[in-house]
Image (cartoon, rainbow, N blue to C red):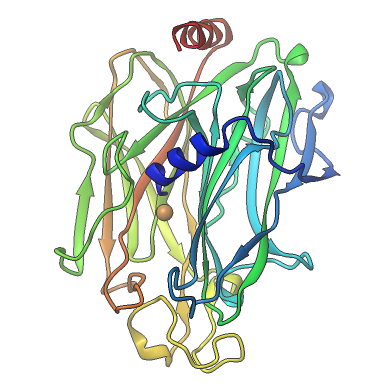
Length: 362
Ligand SMILES: [Cu+2]
């Protein structure tokens, strides 16, 4: 994520309206009895330059301010991101188009781990497209609270490994509940843990590293409040094998990366029609064998209650011998990431009081 670029664009566009997304109504999965709703929102089309583009090489950043939120004065309980072409087919490694990252921020809030960030980072996805279910299959009453006047933004980086520019759209399935029926629910508060630090750039330069290395967030981050550690979702780049989360120095969660579990995550051999014989961004193998991308990163759920002052830390493990890293156009290695987005469940009253206090302070 290019946070600094995001801030500049956000400042330039402040007050501007994004386009309305297309909305499709789906069947909710949990808490139907409480009136849960599920919608798929298609975000605005983005033209991603081809990999021969001089300035971008096919990597492009897109920032959408005032991105449509699924609801207001409500609890978001589920999130399922994807990327698609204009004809509705899925865009992924097998069609030479990757969702490097998408980060949703609530511009009306202050980020808990990095108050300097413009907005609260509340949901994120890499190309692995991890689904988030804050209700743990309907067994837990919790959701991310969106206020009546909250404004969303989404920061994306997309990678086109075909020759021609192509248009794609981010799609997100959201599940949510109106706040009126949310009695007895906890508020899921997002905590952004990052090996580059809570306010870091997220990008780790690996040019000085060997094939096998790990990166640790230092120091760990001390939470001002307690709650239930509800969900931990990790994000790594290719070459990543595992992310560990430490609670007061003790390993509490291992997020394990798996590769190429389905055809969408298998890069076509070079010389295929999509590739036209160009090298793609992944190193090693010379294009002879199928190359696989990260297809899932396991999440951790229900890790128990923690008290205020609890220290949360993460370490990301990479092994380029097992899985080659992404290469830039000069043949060097692209920077990598190690991020764990933790949602901690707090009692409704306590969390909302903190939100209101934060708004008055800003
Ligand atoms: Cu990333």
